Length: 165
Image (cartoon, rainbow, N blue to C red; front, top):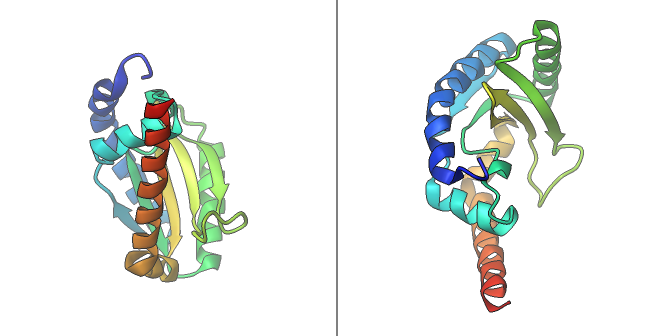
């Protein structure tokens, strides 16, 4: 997608997102969670992320299609993670599989905690986040607003530096 750019990535992702939705709903039912299906990441945000984080390499953008599964507690979340990983290994699928797991409960980033799974959906990478409801509640209030402002400031500073270089 680096060579093809954002237009080709979005065109491809739209087709794969339906499968991601089906798989997330299947996993939520199997693990006792509640699916939260997000729209595709907005193009302006994707473009900013590609420029400021990935050196204009569109192929590095892994969260254009994304979804979450929400759990009532941390024990349920970790049981679900085990199920998802075991399901992934036992099924041996090539059309939907886990590529990477990042546990931000163990290694917290900016105070934010979840488990992020990068999944391959027919050759396109998407993100599945596993959340605990109480943490999501905090994110939906002041916590997320602070994160957005911090990100905007950092990206604006970076873009200014690049333009002046």
